[in-house]
Length: 132
Image (cartoon, rainbow, N blue to C red; front, side, top):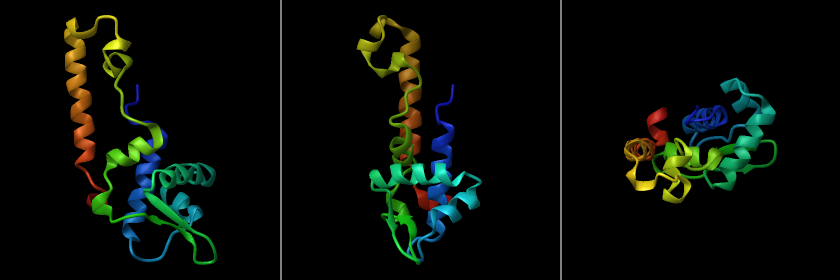
């Protein structure tokens, strides 16, 4: 089980690459893909998701490419994860009492809910500027 999926890992690396060029020249999807050893097609797909989440913007033209939509201090790793794969869910039992027939009486569920909350908070407290 991957809590952070492979594509999400790639998206985190792509956004980390954009931190270095923040406030400078946009970087093409081709260059970002090459820098992070990701296929160009996958990089484009991930950058589209990040753009839809308003984490990156794109510019067309000869000097076009992608750049962070806001200051790297204002973007958390959690936002990147959520943009690509949605909220982190360790397993379906922590998705809500209605998803698990054992509900609140399950001791394991209580611990898993705490772990999921910890992971979410941890990722929310890491901003892209820390990945320079």
